[in-house]
Every structure is written in C-alpha cells, then in structure tokens.
Length: 363
Figure 1 (tube, helix red, strand yellow):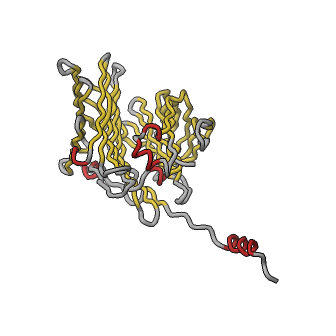
Figure 2 (spheres, one colour):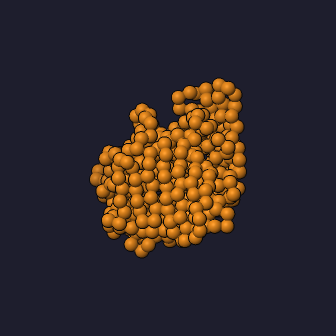
Figure 3 (cartoon, one colour):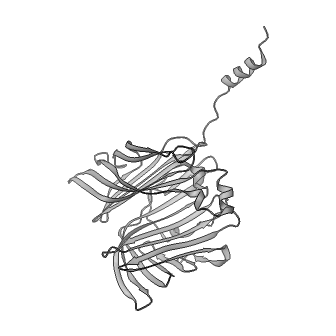
C-alpha cells in the first residue's frame, strides 16, 4: 500500500524528535569577594553586548540621587555611552543626560574609573566616588558599604553552547556622604543608597521572555530579588536569586524560590497581551542552610509607570530592536512582608516602600 504524500509528511513530523533547547548555566563556581576587576567594563564585541552601572541614594529631607552609565553595541557603532541621572535636595534639583561615541569617553582598569562627559565613577568596592554635573548643578558623593558588595557565586549566567554570559554585581546597602551645589556654595549631604553593575555578551531580549527585580530597604534590612524566564531558544527553568541582608550579615541567599501570583494584570494595550504578576507570595530556604527558611508576600500598592520601550528608542536602535523584541516595562510601588527563620528566632522585614519592576521582552 502506498501512503499519500501528506500522510508521509505527517508520519515524518511525528517521528522527528523535538529540537533540544540550549542549556542555561546560572551561578556556578565558588564565592569570592567582589574585587576591583568586577567593576571594569567588559567592552564586548558582540552586537548584543551591554554594560550598565546604576546607583541610587535617598536623603533625610526627601531628596534623592539617580546615576547610570550604559555602554551598548546595539545599532550603529560599538561601545556607545549614555550618561544620565538626576539630583534633588530640598527645593533644588538638576539632571544630566549625555550620549557619547566610543572615542568620547574613557576608562581605566586599575585604579578603576569611568569618565563619561558630565559624569564619572571611580574607586573600589569599599569606596566608590560618583560625580556629575548638569542643569546648573554639581554633585560629588562617596558610597561605602553597610552590606558589602555581593555576587551570586561567580555572578554569571551562561547561555547556550557558546556560553555567552550575563554578569551581576549587587551593592545591597551603602552609606552615602558628599556635597552638591546649585548656583552657589557647596552644601554637605548624607544618606543611604544601593547599586549594581552588570554586563552581558547577549542582548537581554535574547536571554529572556520575562524578567523582574525587587528592591526593598527597611532600616538596616535589605531585600533583593531577581528572576529571569529564559527566552524560547533556552531551557525553560526560571533563573532565580534572592538576597536578604541585615547590616553586614547575610540572612538569606537563595537560588530557588516558590513565587505564587496573588494578583495579575493582562496588558490589553499591547499586541502580545503580556500577563504581569503584580502581587505574589514567596517561600524558600537558604542555599547553604535548610534550617533558614523564609516566607513572605509582595503586594502591589500602585503601578507607577508602564513604558513601551520601543517608543523610547531612537530610530536606528528601534529598527534593529523591533525585529527581535516587543519590550514593555512595568514599574510598581509595593508593600512587602518577609519572615526569615534564623537560629536566634524569626526576623521580620516589612514596609510599604519597595520598588518592583517587571520586563516583558517577548511573547
């Protein structure tokens, strides 16, 4: 009996094994202290390469500081730099935003420094100096650790057989001292802050379908949560990380947790109808000590922003990015209540000033 050609095609399709997903290896190796070398730009050659420094500070008078340096190969030209930020104190405020080509900014490895137009960062993990000027103002701040700089083991996630990497260094809580001026004399200022440095050989939309990050600071406690759902080409297991600190002490470091949504939002404005977990419960254990358990709840207070990231890009970058990704960012104020079981008892961390960001990169 001769089979119909369509029947043969179906039989072949059913007999052909599914294409194996590429492996993802996260947080390998043994822990080492964060060193000066972890601050230096990667200066990768891949089209998807990116490097970013982000630092924030809050001051007792309600003022705040935001600082970022971003290096990117996406679009025309390599190692483009964007330096931007803002400073507010009392009734004074100013901001800066400068885009630079690769020959318009510079860095050194040791001593570490990056100078990018109106902004610079230099120093070591034990003391970082950030400077910026723009909008009629200047600011000079030093960040020193309350909870020391931290990396999840080797700090890296490796994607696929080529093992292209994404690298993360976290600064959970820092003392901030310095000065600022707006058209007059220098004024001293103190506060507390946090930050991060990350780089990647692979564009984030190639890494993930969805990613999210939570930060909360309450007194000397901090909570830092990061989760990434790998992109379609990779194994689907979520990549998770939770760090909880109390002063200089690490209360919890967890690479696997159970996060159950209790409230979700479907983005009807977007063609992909992204589903955003806005509130969720947490449950898990410390990676090294199973007797250190934690449980908690993250609850939405309000959605601060929803940003279609393609709309923020210039024409050249948008032309490239839109072929591969439909990114939207959702930014929330959240309440948090986390209980951590320790040998001394239960530590409770709660507040209503947490910041939670969800990124959907692709369907």
